[in-house]
Image 1 (tube, one colour):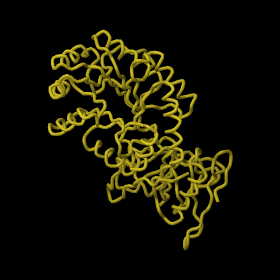
Image 2 (cartoon, rainbow, N blue to C red):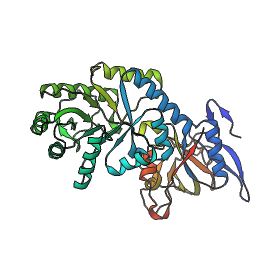
Image 3 (cartoon, rainbow, N blue to C red):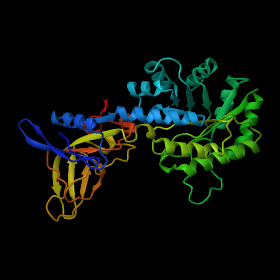
Image 4 (tube, one colour):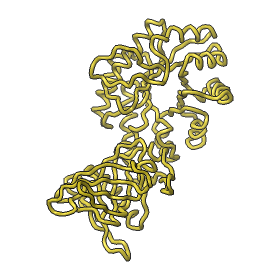
Length: 402
């Protein structure tokens, strides 16, 4: 049984037949008790995994959709962030739409969710045969919004969709940004805001109306001021270009806590610069599974060096942790007074397969060979990007009820 201590779960011994007692060592911010017990049970039978706390995910979906509805915000789920069937259905069941980039992702939604959810498409590039199929789905309403990524792409789509409303993705390249506002620039996506008039004219030449504007600031850089600044600039430049904006999609990178007050403040800040008649859309990826994803890895070896200790574990930064910024477990010193940090590494033959460094915390157990380390804040992207590089198997999500 995992003991509770100040909202955390103290690492506790579990028994593995033939090998004596082993420990499961958690990060400071531990999963819910039921999830922790399920992870321990999996470790007890020697089964590593990427675990998803579905109860917490459903809570995040519920709170976010309810608060979003109060402010007239449409929230989408970025399919690229994790295409697991049950996760997609949980999102759709609460009215969350889907952000896709191509036909393949549309088929994932269509085959796993069913019905006709709201679907938005933005793609850096589509092959000719994909463009024609996407246009058919736009005409039938299966794709409700689409945003072209270049003036050339816009011209192609307008030629195939004469008389339609169309959208384009923009970036903030060349714009004067207030010091201290995190913006990723230059971006390789979209067109510059000073090209919006040209985009409007391209659309008009095919009898189309440019009504939908999209921007995605890099997720790692976003904070509330990034969204507000982007929205203000997008609306200002659209007005200068003579565009009557019907929908503003501010992309992903949502980093607010999933509680009513924080989300209310955030959506309210956006609505303070975006008129109510303009549809406001957000399409987060990382956000949905934040505080829901955990990875377990067994310690295979402990190697002592003069200034640090290497923990060789049954995971890999490339295999299981791409695009994650994991919370590492709390580990005690290898011996009383030993201050050497731990370097948690994978077992691939790649020098930079390093998960992270952990400073020892007195009063906690030291990791030993065959113990298990549990990492928090593992993103769904890591499952999607997982590989079996160097013979280390990728890990599909294991969904836990909580």
